[in-house]
Length: 530
View 1 (cartoon, rainbow, N blue to C red):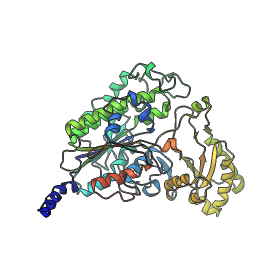
View 2: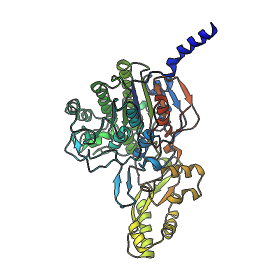
View 3: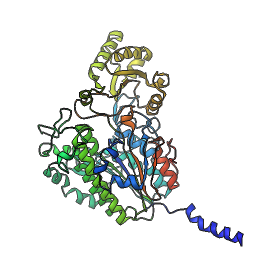
View 4: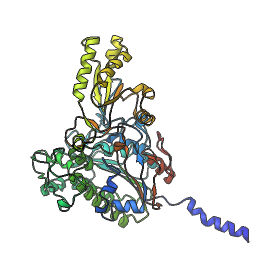
């Protein structure tokens, strides 16, 4: 009888070994979101958006990027490949191809054409990505019978998450305010997308103008509204509320408003409905990237009322998405993760006004001095082909032709750059391990270095020193204010908990692959979050 009882109990436990997979995975990336934004505006959020994800899901409180530079393209690639730029190859938004010396945009593809517009904004594809993504692996595991659709205002925020096998990736074209795609995915837009585009939703939002969601006096977590450290939208004279969104080229300026996120939410809900995602008998994937947070952050900076208002509105957008998923897919039938592609530094002038360290690095001045020093040493020959994200790319063809020592060139550049205000160290990218910087930063830089696409040398700036920005804010450094981002899991089989041990952005896809019982992406280095 005891043996029969054990067998019976064993049979009862078998379903738990092969639990039904979620009907839908929804990946949410919030562009330029600091981890602290979860708490800075916490008591202003509704109970159904960020708070719900935090209270009912897993909150990884010490989640960081483990490479630099921290930029949009590399961030999305690392989230979805479980890897780092050294392996997946998306080192920056733009880089210089070392072999040809030509500048490359991360998702440029001259072999495809725009679908849905007469502009060239759709000549894009994921072909520069060296590895598979979690979205690719999920489709492969299901014999390509599932659907993957990716959406973002930014082309790179949509194309890279969708991977090589997406059924569709859509992004915003400011020429007409349309959602477009490329012939990499389709020959023409689905009828429902064409109809959505003809509704003129961006124009309707612009006609509303942008005022605060609540009385402006209640925005006490932010600096004063009329700040010299903030930029402007369009032709307005001051960076203050209410923002008049009428003027020239405002379909492009639309990106710098929270309405860009709301438009994406509306298009995402329409996508769920029309494509019947989560209702195909497989595990489908919807990848969303909210980009307006980045545009607003760059324009106004993280201490602005504009950023606070954008997050309060985004909270409502996320709430609507979760409500829809509950109603149409079913609670505990879908899995959501939310993270960010990078965080952000504070405006250096704002910090100085508060007696904090920081400054502006004069990039053009330093590069001009470096070129002049090289001309004096080697004659009138171009030895620098470009500078991207603090990395210096040498003209390898000229160096080889003239038989110039790269080490000598490096010594000259080091002398010039190390005397510039704000420079902490000058590093040979091929010899990062020999650099006299803390080990954690050596690892971060090594993970970001790709031989075919990274520069020859890098000037590492001190914390809160940035290149070029006078107003607004920037990012892309090795420091925690750029690397520390949220990571929340919610929904299918998730029990509420808080994880305070360090997790890396590359752990997301490895964890998803483990939960979904599929192979991790081909370049994955992540660990399963316990």
